[in-house]
Image (cartoon, rainbow over all chains, first blue to last red; front, side, top):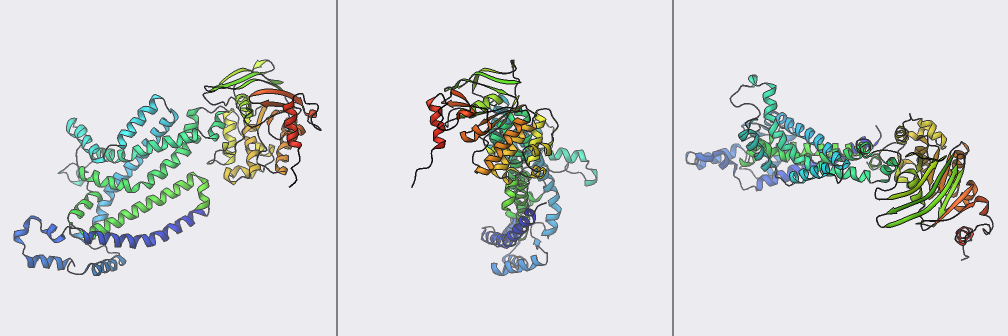
Length: 327
Length: 240
């Protein structure tokens, strides 16, 4: 490996060094300014049973009676010791909540990432190779419709058709409700993943199809492709030969760089399908003003998106040697 | 063996752009093709190599010893340096062209035949100088094993020394038994290596002149246009 990779990694680590505290401060400020009272969110419907003294006691126990700056400093001190604090919503350490829910989210996001990359790239290549003909028109129409379809609408549509209408697939959860973990078979787990993964994949497929198609067309129109055509290369051979690198490199870079959108999509998909992952925990933490958990998930998300962007940068340089000079 | 182009015409939906072009080329010979910008020189190269744009219509005959030439019999070394794939190293690109012709690639051999070291195979196009890139384009054409090569403006953008090396290389290719058509604005260079030079003007054939006609003020050239073209290259710069 050339010198570009260590240089790139070093540069990005420096960036992460100032990005993390800045993001933490921003997140804390936003959470502090949010109009939700965590004590009220905790008390919920039991307002009549819990008096002002008890409310003050809860606030004091959570450290909410202290100024925001002091709470942030205290949180930073905890973070330095590797402690992300205690989740109010789950009544458990934040680290434990994240560790318990991360695998479920990663399974969903990872499968959706792979599926949308393979499908999006292949469909984009097929559309580019048949430019102007009916396969191109059909694929483009599907991609544009998908691009214009909100994720929640696609999720509800999938549930309505495949879970409620046809009854082929479960409408919720990661396992059949009421079953013990030891009773759940791999087939059960897979069946429960189909609809959430399909929903999440749809979010990423459309831009990939359109970008891959455009990258391939740009290559097919290039003097390099015309040079190969002049010596007998067919459009299909060009598309799935040298064109593959031109198109797939861009597609992978784009896909990795959109890790944030994928994570955002997972929040939605996990909510609709009651998937026990970080997305669902995020919604519960937000509605319950669970600052420690929101901070923990926020930082975990930042690291996830940062890693996606870093991998995108590496993929771009691996695909295009001209970029390695300016790493 | 003789490659003959008879009455070659090319038209686009907007109208004809080449008409009545004829030329002949023996193996071991270099024929030059020149003319002002827009005369249709590169279009002749693309028509010979079967690389015309999709909306072009070609008429006329291209034959080898009287039989119609099969597609891709003439290998093209294009004018544009970006005809090299920016994402593939030189060796892989040469290999691609050999495979397209159904041959196994001898990358070091192809590079050696254009005067480049075998280590060039590892380089990407952006790592090549202009002269090296021109040689690699020639190597891609040679990798096909074609007996007939068209080199489109192989010396454009090069300094005098680099251009001289490319012209010597083309002369070597002809000496090894290939028929070579060299398209160039550089009439002096063409007259040095070619046996004959075909002159085009606005898509029409003006004349085919023997190399020795490009001498002095070009008095042996038949057409005024050819003489003007030759004399334009001889004219010294005006004093300041």
